[in-house]
Image (tube, rainbow, N blue to C red; front, side, top):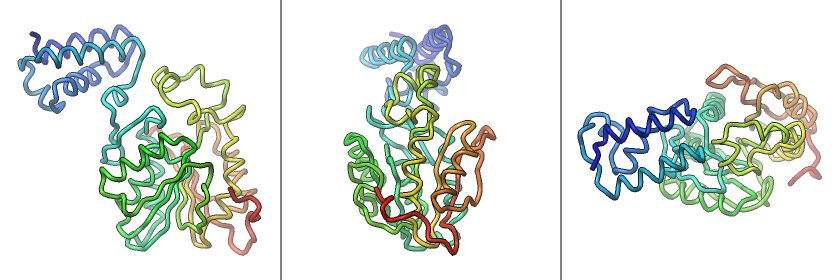
Length: 295
């Protein structure tokens, strides 16, 4: 029987040998998960022995992390986002901290957080964007769509576990999936990786996130071109949209949204200082997108 501290050291050694930059942290988290302890408890009690069943679970997780580069979040089945715990599934993108930039931007542009706002999330995945916003906007109600049935079920489960199910609705489908609107806030983290770039992504992303959530077409902008007119048509007159985009795409995304009848309020940098989120509103005194653009 080995101790928690010994297990952490061995896991760290294997992860470092596999070229994993977060070897120590990953080792602590996986030992904690296998033993049913918190990470703080593992750090504080390194002499605590691991039970045989915990050791077996840890060995299996270590192999998947080192050999398959499966992310810790997928091994434990959860990801913390905006201080909330979200279950993951094979059908969902693993939320990244940089996407919290979008939540921050929407809240910064929402002066009255007690207002009864209508929200919509296109490509809802785990529900992390919509549900994080609902947790901060107590009188808002939200809807979300995803083309993957598994993602819709995951989002519903997360809404229930967070106590937000009564204010959140989800449907399988593309774009607005039959929801009529108008909406006061529309958010979207679409696929925006150029197809040819996917092979060069970190294996944690390339091999474990669903490709449909990554592949944005030849230049990474297919989803923006398709969704921008629909977003313009569904926004309330005083509404606001926030969309995430990839490296080097800021100018192109601004141009696409401007052509759809939206004015850019700001481009928001992520945690690394890279432009990450476009915030836009309906163009004042203009017709905007045609109803035929609705999805």
